[in-house]
Image (cartoon, rainbow, N blue to C red; front, side, top):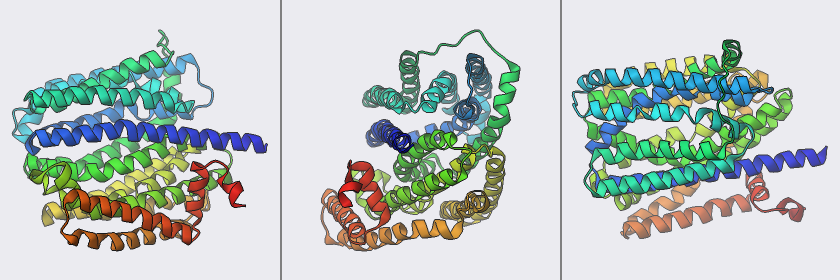
Length: 486
């Protein structure tokens, strides 16, 4: 029994590492590509693509969310289940693309930008391409084969990145961004088709779809609410302000979002299938959820505080002075993104035990509060909107924890006790590092010194204080660390 538990722990750790590599690899390359493109293109061109991506991101929920998660959660999958999900996703994607194709002029008129017609019609095709990946991604995730996902996303990000930068150098403007997105989806589809041996068969069952959707529809609606809410501010900013302002807001969210999505996204992809195995043991789920929150808060809080400190030299170094207005967006939105992994862990615990009904209720409550905050923040300009986003995120944390007080016996006091040490240590690190910016050094040297001093201070203090989360991290990274410590 001990060996089985140890083997499972090693599998989860291995899966988490591969998923993190996939995230940091593909998103890291994409992040670098976007930084290069930002130097070559203008904020207004980024703003056009950002507007269209708002609509396609929302539409992708109908194609990929819910049904894919249902495949992971269901224990006794058969070929009819899988093929039914594939054809359903493809049909929905084709329908949505048709709506986007004929609705593009209306979107263009709403934002008073004629360039949106062609951009919308081309970018929306990514929905159909994405539908081919739904089943393959779900099957690989269910079997915790994240190495294959890592390789496919890494190759796709590299190929599309090279092509996108080449097109920007050739003065393709906004189309460099559009075609980069499409080529990335095409490449992922081809690689996953080769890697995953499953092929769709001419099988379809409405009864199977109905059973899968009894669990998945709640998650799909939850994801839809989440996407609508996440993109609502971008829709408002794009309509009320200029495309440049939307580009600054979008880039400001990209920096902290890049760091957080790598951690939070990895946890979400690995934690859900791992927890689903133990859906009948609430004590086991509580322990795994707690360990996830303790570890991720220890990593995420210093990342966000550090990003706030180095925002100015980082932006001026990577994006040049034309993107300087992005700096305060990054610094404020880092507060919002810091809570993402904690929210993810609490919600994934509910999904793992099949309580997608509670998950949906939480989404409705959180986003209703967030909508009220957004309406109020409109009276205070762009900065009111951004600060309102931070406030809404902290309210969401309290809402997400609430059901786990009774279900997992893991409530506010325990979770505060688990995250507070990392929170305080991260801000102590920021207080030590920030004065370096007043030395008058170059951006590169300033940022380099700040990062080095910050890392040494944070992990050095954690070691001296003998923090449990630091010891666990070492045990996960260094084999037999725990035994040597004993």
